[in-house]
Image (cartoon, rainbow, N blue to C red; front, top):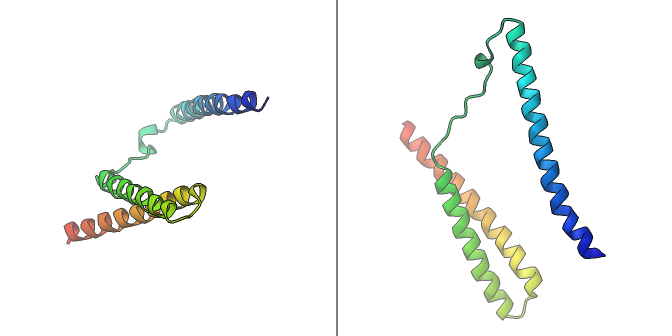
Length: 115
C-alpha cells in the first residue's frame, strides 16, 4: 500500500512540473502577443541574463564541501555517532560552507578585476 503511494509522488511531481512549464510558456506567449497588438516591442522588456562566469567555481567549492562533509560524517560514524544523523548533517553543513566560500571567492575576484 505504502509503495503505491511512494510511486505516485514522483509521477505527480513530474506531471505537475511539466504542466507548470506549459502554463508559464503560454502566459509569456499571450503577454508578448498583447504587447505586439498595442504596438510595443517585446524585446525591450526581455530580461537579459548576465552570466558572471563564476558558476563553475561556486560548484567546485560546493562539491569540495560535500566531499569533506561525507569524510567528516564517516569519521563521526566510526566514533559512535548515529549514521542517520551524521551524513545528512555534515553534507548540508559542509556543502553550505563550500557554497559560501565559493561565492565569497568569486566576489573577491570580481572586485579585484573591476579595479
